[in-house]
Image 1: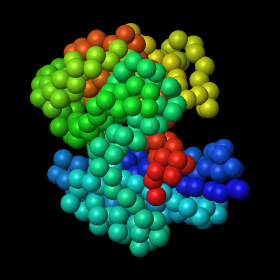
Image 2 (image 1 turned 90 degrees about the vertical axis):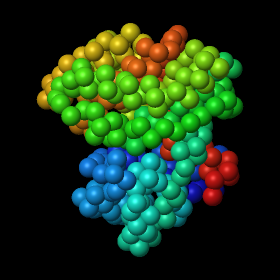
Image 3 (image 1 turned 90 degrees about the horizontal axis):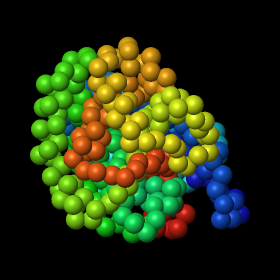
Image 4 (image 1 turned 60 degrees about the vertical axis):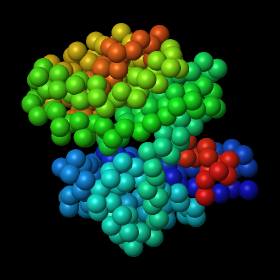
Length: 311
């Protein structure tokens, strides 16, 4: 039996569309697309999706709906995360998308988001029997999950995503030392529950998923002469490389960052604060190694849909 399934991930920075074909128990990716919608831009810390971002979201869903129709997909599972769940007009945007495209979007909680990210990562990289910390840096929120294979020990979603941090702290370009210090003071307060959990469970491995980690891996691979393949579920990165790349990023302005091989337009504005967040954690807690999973939230959703645990 053959079926087609579309998954739409309406993130704060990027909207993703994944269309897969189900043949018996096997899946084949038919279409994969991401659009830089940036619905958090200009309003995320005021809990509002501004009109320009509202329009970008509607246009992105128009595009996705047309592709879904073109591919003759009958089943669509769409969900939204931090910007939708915190904005005063998030449900209004969800309702307008439904009216225009007939696509129903579920606004999920931070805890559900963390659970699904872990499932996507664990299926891709096989976390193993020892606890690891999974970290996903979004535009609106950051999810941290401590777990071993198929078992979550602790998880929490923090509303400290990269778009929020840019608006609060990255006011100069290059970022000022004083701005980094203010950011670190903020993180010290906000992330206290994370460090309590790290000290309790003692994970030795950090696994980053999607977004910033993809770009850091791209930069590292180009510097080290390593090849990446589209089908890879895990890509190379080292703790030493993270440190070196971070110290390069914080001294460059936007134009100079765009000249770094592996940098992309989608990531260039938020990567300084995202890298600063990662650097803060690595300076506070010692990991033995770092891994990068190319699978995250939407793949976790796919895995749960295939198991029949999501409707």
